[in-house]
Length: 118
Length: 107
Image 1 (tube, rainbow over the protein chains, first blue to last red):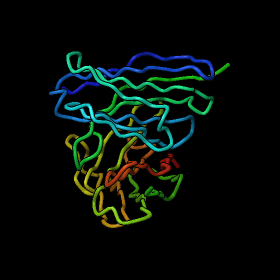
Image 2: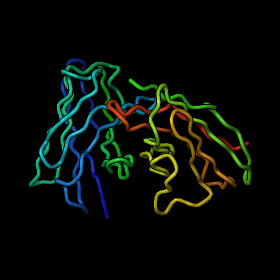
Image 3: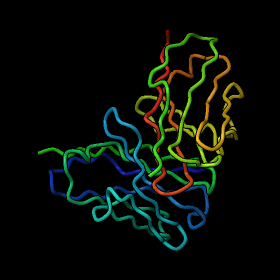
């Protein structure tokens, strides 16, 4: 079955960077895109960006452009989300999710809590 | 960016009730709309895609309808497992924005 397993919780200081991984299994990695979505405490889900598993093309939210980088390692079936210049407002649960084209996100990782605090 | 607005933000209902949640898009999104259920501490779970297409394994008491800018999610007879927060999301263009969520509470 499709599984997305994310790396563990992180605590970072303001100005630092964080890298969260999302390991995919149970499907052909290069045939699907992976999206990242975050959710600050008590807030709505916020779309951050995506990366195509096949060619590695990316698209980022304008809000995060310049601070977010998505990469993938096809041999490891893993996607990485790098967020730099962290601020307290970046404290959130971060999720990766697989997109079914034209049909939303059918599988999600378990979430990675990133806490930004001095 | 396309804005998604859900109503109500909170809904109190009883077991067996029929409930409807509305999602409005700030511009037409055809039927490029998904509904998710999220329980505390868990990732969202896809219920419905393409506005009305029920995902495999989702109980038939859930249904979706609408096109253009107005959409609804209906639960025909509430069960204890249905008390959660529900989000709509469009995927017609980037960014794929979500509604603010509707928290379904036990009355």
